[in-house]
Image (cartoon, rainbow, N blue to C red):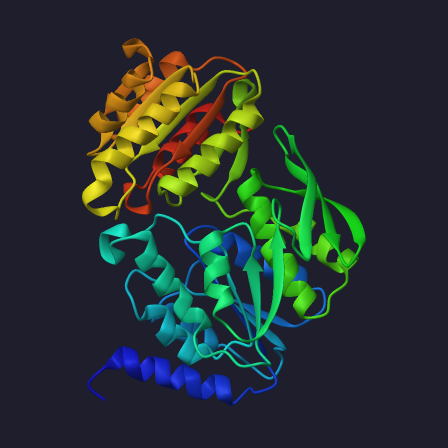
Length: 381
């Protein structure tokens, strides 16, 4: 065959069909798909023998390689599906043949390749094409674009949300500074408190998505809540590190786009409470012609947060600084730097005991290098 990627996918599809008793749950979305996949696996592994996507092996190479690991021991596969271009999700769905699927949300990611949020919605919606009455989808009722996609699908549905009426819901969301977030999980008239070992309302949505998949597959509220509390975030995906000098570092370095940044900033503001906040932000990539505007808006948002210091790294650092200044932030507290080593050195000059630090940027910015160096210099508490 002339197309090795096609051949790999066809082989994985053949192997998946050799295991017809294995159910497949597929997860995609603009933000949170890896975290939702991890939460879903933690919940379901209490009731099934689970194969799950490792890391983010979620593309035309990674997903087939994961499916080829299926064995007679497995009862369920939880697979993440990523994409940059139209047609990618359609092909991944063709290979994996999921019976349960979830779109976490639809937001401003990969605009460079997909042109608009509407284009992103169409590309993500490929996961729900051609579903039949026996298929299941989990629907985020608080995301209008996801709701619109679900309305066109004729299959079984389980809804989740916070603000809209939904079958799987969260109430009483509260921050536990330095630890995570807690809420009450509601399902079928029952209620159970949950504490997540991560931060932010956006991760409550991820947990609700996982809980919806669990409900579809027949798990109880108690089983679901217990599984969610076992979840631990990957490095770079919302980890809270406790460093020397009573410092808290929020490591959200894996990736960044306007919507994920807004969610993280909101959570960071709530978690640090009255403590000083220092934010280190690298470029948001793959945003297309509006890149500069998105960075000015992000800088303005951070300037409005009244953080003690802002550190900007990357080609868009001047746009970020411009936005922060437009919000009235003093120039002396805005640091535009060219290399990670400068960031760490400048941070060390201004850090005070009890500060909260947030570090975030798109994957290719490799912001994790800053986290690693800070841990090396300051040590873990």
